Length: 253
Ligand SMILES: C[S@@+](CC[C@H](N)C(=O)[O-])C[C@H]1O[C@@H](n2cnc3c(N)ncnc32)[C@H](O)[C@@H]1O
Image (cartoon, rainbow, N blue to C red; front, top):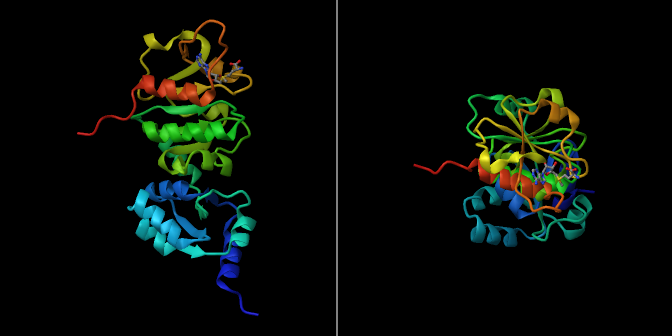
């Protein structure tokens, strides 16, 4: 029996999926394409709808997408991506080489901070932080602990922006170079601190805060202003405030 187009697409997906990054939904695919990911295959239940969406929201990627799209039936897509995005499109992409990311993270002089998430527990927070780092033009996001920052739930929460910054897991004794500022409610008020471009900004886990190992390595402990009796802010919210305090991407021109 000859294999139909859906069968071929499903088989190829199965061969490529191990080790690849799942891009679930239009926005993740759009960002990955914009920031140079090697994307493909791209499967959808409705190619015309995806191309219309691209024309409306991101016409810079329409033509590339047109060449990558394969239409499959809904059951097939659900079989590959069980709780897929409402835009009914998903893709696989190559994960950037670890050595390239580590080189980008170690490169000096550094034009923008690295964000360190010290043993994060929530993949939604990891993705939200990657999205912030991409938007602020941070050099990258490194994590310690056992979560993979490229887990599909983190990539989905990051809207595919993992390709717009350097994202890697590292050991505590292999942190990127640069002055280490640990964010902690016990630290000195961040409003009196200048965060340099080559800073590593460390944030603790949702459960336990900054680990003893990172605390011991920190050059400074800094706090975000908070009213008495409030214990702490959400992790991603804290990263947002610290990056805003650093200053964000330099204005063009
Ligand atoms: C949800 S909080 C961790 C709460 C944890 N129960 C604790 O004991 O610290 C996650 C991280 O956000 C950062 N953070 C939250 N509120 C902060 C504040 N007011 N000042 C500085 N950092 C803060 C810290 O890095 C903290 O480790």
